[in-house]
Amino acid sequence: MASSLTRVPQVGQSFVGFEGVSEVIGLCKAGLSLPNPGDYTLFSLWYTDPAMAPYSLYLHIPFCHHRCAYCDFNTYAGLDELIPAYLDALCREAQLLGDSAGARLLVHTIFFGGGTPSLLSPGEIGHILQVLADLFSLSEGIEITLEANPGTLSVEYLRDLRSLGVNRLSLGMQSARPEELRLLERQHDYNDVVNAVNWSRKAGINNLNLDLIFGLPYQGLDNWQENLEQAIQLRPDHLSLYALTLEHGTPMAQWVARGLLAEPDPDLAAEMYEWAVERLVQGGYEQYEISNWAYHADSGVQFACQHNLQYWRNQPYLGLGAGAHGFANGLRTANVLSPAAYIQRCQDGWVSSQEGVPVFPLTPATVNTQPVDRATEMGETMMMGLRLTQEGVSRIVFQNRFDQALVEVFGEEIDELVALGLLEWVGPGQEILRLTARGRLLGNQVFMRFI
Image (tube, rainbow, N blue to C red; front, side, top):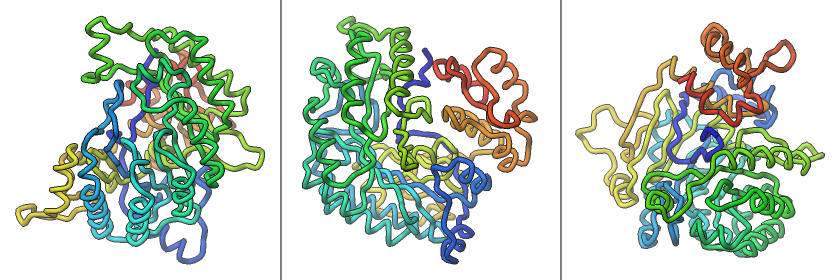
């Protein structure tokens, strides 16, 4: 099974972005509304010119009470004393980005990721959101997501978040089974998940995601089926399902290397994934990305994660915080990993020896910058767009974006992958290129052909 079924992290992603949204801002000031980002056709027609795309903001909160055994994200336990200074630095970085952008950027999604963002108080989250509102033009109906550990929540806390504008919650459920949660070293149980879901609904949060992990050591198909059934019973609006990967340097990877833990079975994990695909269709969920499902509401409400669609559609976003990555103005950027170093860099600001600064989207926290050329941008657009299981990559969108035909650039690769049964052309006029069901299991074999 290819690792296309594993989690695409919020921090550390590599996608290209673009400069210049003044034309969109002008349209909004003139009273014209933006298209619904959930409407694929309209969204694609608008944003084939990436300079017209609204931005997304990712804010990394790297603090945790405990670091889980499988986690290789840029997270830290035992550094809570840094939180006040870190949040000041985060707001300072936002100020620097807003000042250097050259225009008041339009933002249509904000995502608090971690770590455990729910360790922040409502007052701290509210202050950050106010700073962002002062610096950027937040679109009407903006999606604001907060990742949360189910064991850190209360109904009062969630009501406060909702009053601040947070309208999407992503809960790290991972499993419903106590022994699996202990193996993962999660600090909650299934009752905490049930409470968090109920409290979220009472608080008025009507867009709720549950994260689950499958393919664990010693996990049988029946165990996974039980986990997913328990999740479906809670009626979340969105589900994200990821296969466990043993990341270098994590305790779990070390346990397996030392023979203390059985290695996950990739064939069994593939079977679990295929079962989940069928079961979620029966449960009223529509798969829109390799690892993501949104509830198909009769009302037409869109529950697909608009923030993650920004990544998969290869549109611009800014990453703020320690270890955060971003793409804007044709540059790929990465921030310093250490929270203490991040704080210091943002406090110090630009030094006089740094000629030509500030250059959007660089900040004093930036430690790596890489320009993205046209060929790389095309390849990344294919790699990320093909993760979208229904939308895929459109001939028209690709042509309008790059002024070149899709088959002119990647015709040989596409023909080979279609012959292998990994890609297919669908839609009127065979306009959409997307993964087949088999291709979703072997996604990395597809993606590597475009990079």
